[in-house]
Length: 255
Ligand code: PEP
Image 1 (cartoon, rainbow, N blue to C red):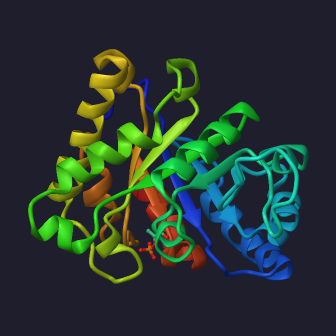
Image 2: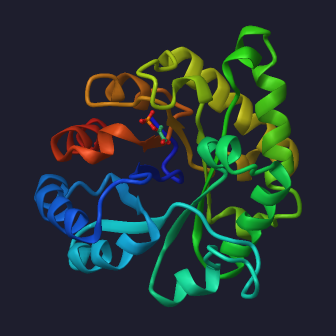
Image 3: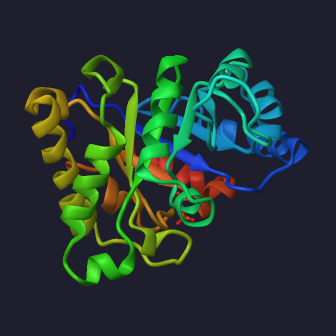
């Protein structure tokens, strides 16, 4: 059983998939399958140009729409970037920050992840903050140190009040899009490590309230076992969030 004060969040990360038309069709397909499943919050994070269509299609359902990134400046000469103020104005509620693909391909660092997180929180959005170790780090036995350091750096200067709007997604990089999933025990252990680090930063009581998701090849087959673990409060789902029946099965596993 999860503590009652912790909300389970099942979030899809569409990555660079779904045009506005495709998103509309997908939401119409998935909405009836997840209707009334209120034991968890349901979110899809969409490419910028798809957000508006997804939000319109999700209106009146229990589906929330988020973005996949946000810039830390409010406005200015940052070609190709989108600010928190812009997202907020169109009604975006959630934003993914620090996804490993951003860190890996777009030179995102803990410093910029921290700045982006602060900007999104200041604009009143909820942040899905991603962190996790790469394969070599797990193999050399330094996973706890890596995720501990990321947690501290990514949340540096973020108040206890703002932490209420932060969801942490523990995503071992070796498990993302690879079909390799952390075992439920590995997911539980590392989510537990993150919670301990949070306890050191904010106190045990506050740490117990933070939603910590697991992400990395979660699917309709393995979700129930992962979500049953006491420190795993939901999932961030890539591939399986593009298939309505698979995503709905994950939501069902969280009920
Ligand atoms: C992700 O993109 O955050 C993710 C976990 O992807 P996948 O489920 O495809 O591994």
